[in-house]
Length: 329
Image 1 (tube, rainbow, N blue to C red):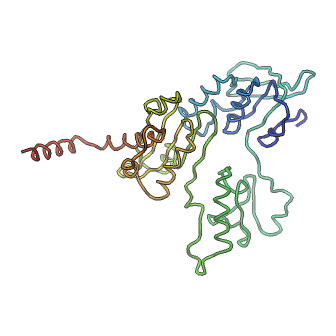
Image 2 (cartoon, rainbow, N blue to C red):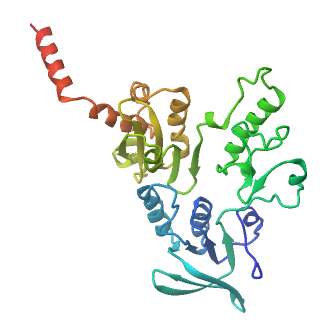
Image 3 (cartoon, rainbow, N blue to C red):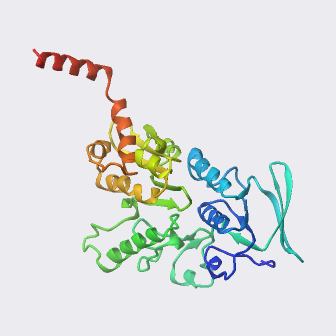
């Protein structure tokens, strides 16, 4: 704190472009702002303790973005250890070890993007029976705190740190607090939410539902299909061929459990899968839906068609061959 630092809020108060910028933390916020400042013309160093950027995303998805921000001039220092910061006559000095090498970086500004801790101390919550810990206020599925007359919504009580998540949670609170069912039925719940999110780098990474690792932890058998954006005509025309669409479908059904899209405007494209999952519409519905040509949205249908083709078995082909042969008599 002695050398001073910026956050994703205070960074927008800058009146001059820092010639040299260090970003600590290669999560979504760190990557978004590192790429943005590199494109503005800053010399950007992105420091991350983990191996690679955005550790919560699929590795190949994060790798696409990592290559993009590196091309934009961001210097990535992964597996950073023993980070030290001090003020010097020429700026703010960072000393860090990365992959066995020692780096000495001097910058004009430091941006911290390593997440936040909930600010709940000093509110007197314990005096009104509202429990909390270092992760935030404790709530149930209806967003009631341990004092059932008090509700909470947003970052303070959720792992989803998004504006749209806070909005959805606020709607749950309003319904449950102001319009409760007289017999305790029909409450809105967090469990019912299908929560998409997007990292606004270029290209974007958008996701909804389960990752493959999540499905394995839940003991769910899935089939995973990936379609490269470079095979979509609109992406080729626009010169934006990096990325892919990926879906996870529960084995033996057409139920979509999760989807990831890496592409320009991925945040827009993911909504089709979000709606399908919320409505209980499966892969068959998307496969049967007409998508205008040429648009990027075709990637959604094309990745679902991989599932459909995989289930066009040799037996089905044989039966259809016999049927058509009989019809031609």
